[in-house]
Image 1 (cartoon, one colour):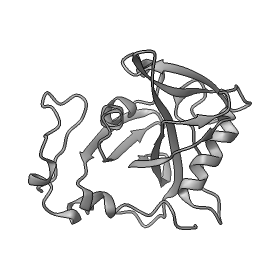
Image 2 (cartoon, helix red, strand yellow):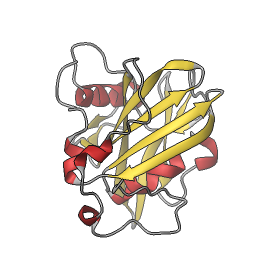
Image 3 (cartoon, helix red, strand yellow):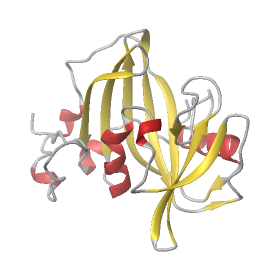
Length: 207
């Protein structure tokens, strides 16, 4: 394949001229992993801002349910009759009581679990402006972190592998395989060209 395979643990920096490497948009499709089960569509939105000469990101500590105790972005399941982008905005408001003024699609993550036949397809968004005050809810406890001091020890095991790309503003796609729900055993993260990014599912179509 001509696609770049780069992760945060790679000693090489992300290549500057991505298009010289990413020649075939269809390389986005990994035919080595095929599943007949339709994925569960989810969202993840993080607010990233420049603040007092530093860069910060708003995360939330999950208070209950799946992933309780972990810090994560804000998001959840896309409901029937709404778009993926609308779901991302709705979940942010429900979990942190703020409204994003901008919402940019940044990448897609696919998660597969040995104890769950249905894969998760998670669409990642960023926002830089919002209205309201981040407020603790029954679901999440919001907290600002400097981007160079993210609590990776208290986050999902996949996060260190794609957050660097997210914070650099690079389009990306990640595939992650977990055993026992939380043990990451295999992963691949790709930087996408414009052509490859355009092949991702639309976030503005109603589901």
